[in-house]
Amino acid sequence: MIVALPTNDGRTLTIVFFPNDAFHEVRADIKGHFMRVLDLAPQLGERVRNGKRSERFLDTADLPFFFRKSYAPG
Image 1 (spheres, rainbow, N blue to C red):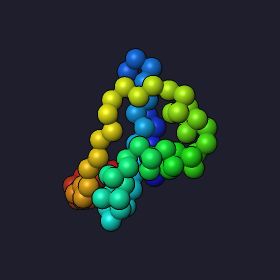
Image 2 (image 1 turned 60 degrees about the vertical axis):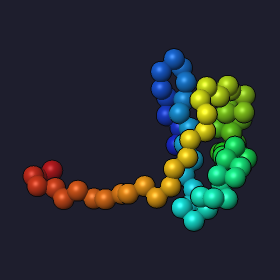
Image 3 (image 1 turned 120 degrees about the vertical axis):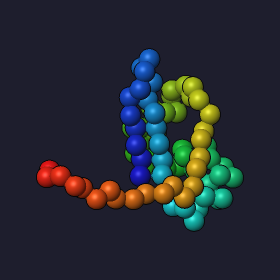
Image 4 (image 1 turned 45 degrees about the horizontal axis):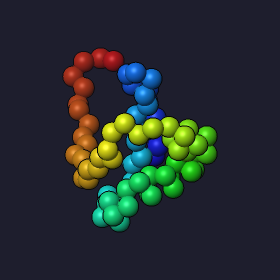
């Protein structure tokens, strides 16, 4: 999954999700894997390549997800 969200100062946060079992492989070459996935969306990949990275790459694995039980209508 690829996510691109506008942030402050005209910047865009770009996120690429990888399967947990690929964590160590991806971590060994984060930028390479990131750019290869962005090539699946050529216009976004081109924009990222022509842009300027303002922060370092961040990674994490095994994020706990859960569903909250709703207690009210809606």
